[in-house]
Picture: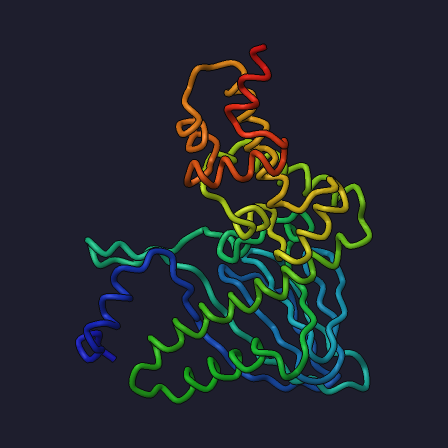
Length: 300
């Protein structure tokens, strides 16, 4: 379908986008236990959702069993085979996709080497292997999206290409959320890993305390949800993240009050407070003195 048939807003969106996921093909497949796939190697990503049955993938020499509601995402250029377990009948949804970068000035789309981790902002070491494996509920939004993508590609209705673009963007948002939950679960009992993440967050606060940063900014830096992050941060430091941020600002303000002649209003802004009144109130609550009283005490 020619782009001239798309509404203007659609055309502008497609032309202005940078990296875009591109669905190469999608299909629903059924296999019995007498079927096996010989070695396969693609230049694109392959996502396989198991609807029914038990099968075994071997990906770059790693064997992984796949059952109902498992999802495997195999990265490009990774040798893999698939064998249906004896006595089993399997049903899969298979989605092949890649990423492309569009040059809006030249009107050309280039293939991209962008990784799936970059795309979903998921960069932990445990997912740098040749594949990702997810476990989802059969009512999960990811499954709904996969079915819709297959349906849109098979029916080829007006606007299907554009809708598939939107659906795969939504798909990877859903995948990132599942991975995020798995990442948090994996560190629940891992005290060294918790300490490392909290240390990273502490350093982030110390490097950016003078800016207008929020809890979401801090926990986003270590890719954790606010509620979970706040819990492990307090466990390791004794402070909530925001209390630690405020105390960091006050400690820096105390240094400036004692060692410089800067006005209190200037110090307030330089350490991240939006108003001097807010600074004064917070400073007195923590130290028991106003900023000027503290300065006078330190100089006498």
